[in-house]
Structures are given as C-alpha cells and as structure tokens.
Amino acid sequence: SQKIEQNSEALNIQEGKTATLTCNYTNYSPAYLQWYRQDPGRGPVFLLLIRENEKEKRKERLKVTFDTTLKQSLFHITASQPADSATYLCALGGAGGSYIPTFGRGTSLIVHP
Amino acid sequence: GAVVSQHPSWVICKSGTSVKIECRSLDFQATTMFWYRQFPKQSLMLMATSNEGSKATYEQGVEKDKFLINHASLTLSTLTVTSAHPEDSSFYICSARTSGRETGELFFGEGSRLTVL
Image 1 (cartoon, rainbow over the protein chains, first blue to last red):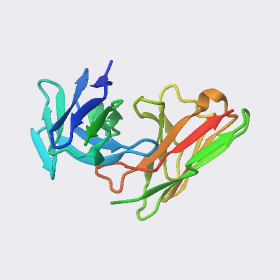
Image 2: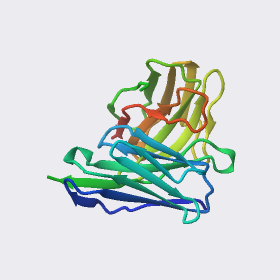
Image 3: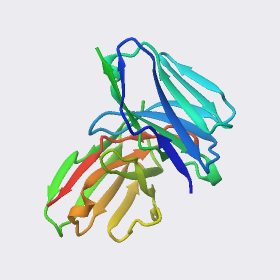
Image 4: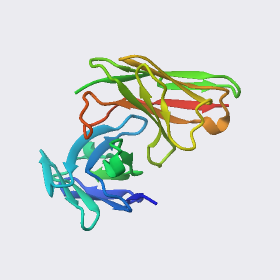
C-alpha cells in the first residue's frame, strides 16, 4: 500500500543551524510534492511545491529537493530561528490521476535559542 | 494569499447531538473544498471532497450519513457531524484551491476542535 514516512521524532537544533527534514514514500509515483507548516491547533500553511521533473526548489531560507529514484524529498531551513519551530508536513499528489494531495504525519522541529 | 475561514474554532457537545462546522473562502470562489480530520500527532486524513452544487465525494471508510457535507455556494461548505459520539472527537480542517491548477497549493482554514462528551 502507499506510504509516506516522516520522522515521528522531533528534530531539535540550535538557532542558526540548518534543519533538514526527510519525507520518504513507497508504492507511490507522485507528480508533485508539497511542504506545509503547521502550528499547534492551526491549519497547515503552504510553503513550497516541487514537481517530479524538478530536482530542487528554493524560496528564501527554504530549499526542497526531490529524488524520484530514492523516493525521497529533503526539506532544508537554513539559518534556523526559534520562530521556525513547528510541525512540517509533506504532501504528495498526482499519483494514479488523483491530484488531491496525501499528507504525511509531519515532523516536529524545535529550534533552540 | 487566499483566506479560508472556519467556524467554530472549537466546540464541546453532548453525545448524540449534531454539530455543524462552516468553511468559507473569503476572497475567492472555491468550486471544490476538502474536509480533513486530524488526530494528535497523526497525518491529515481526507474525509471528503465537497463540490459546489453537487454531492460530496467521500473517501473509503467515511460514513456519508454521519458526516453530512453541503456546498451550497462558491464560498461556503459545511460539515455536519450527526449524532456525535466521543470517538468523533477530533480536529476537523477544511481547505480549498484558488484555481483549477491541479498541483495548486491548498489553503486551509484554522481548524475546528470538536470534543464530544
């Protein structure tokens, strides 16, 4: 069955360092992948989209890579700040003709000052 | 970005009662809205796709008679949890796309925390 895996353990890093979050998937051939940020008790907020024919996307301090051979996406936040602390969700879509994204459970990032 | 408003943000009700949650697109028209359910530390689970002017499409395992969805206008979709029970307690979130782009980002409401006593 299709599976999206994000590390369930929280990632703790020091302010100023680069945070790297991983999204792995199996039995899936997505046409695109999205990353969202979710704060406690709030709805997710879109961050970045990357398509299957793209290797890397950047937006300010954010960088996303997409390796369809490894079936993996990496999400990087450079020069991390305590305000970046949140849960980050990856979402895959476009598999089997369905363009409604399917979400992973997210990884919690905690940036310590 | 586009704004999706959800109301109420939290609700507590007695077992057996029905609860209605509203989802509005404030500055755009949404022919399609999506309803998700999220348990603590779990992923967003798609419940149904709400289509303006037609019946909602429910995901497998979601009881359509229990979770009634109405999308009466291009800016409003409602989810009614009928005869709610404690196991229905969860965080319900709606979302919408601003355009017909299939890879377009989803704009989410603030979510509604339902607690059934």
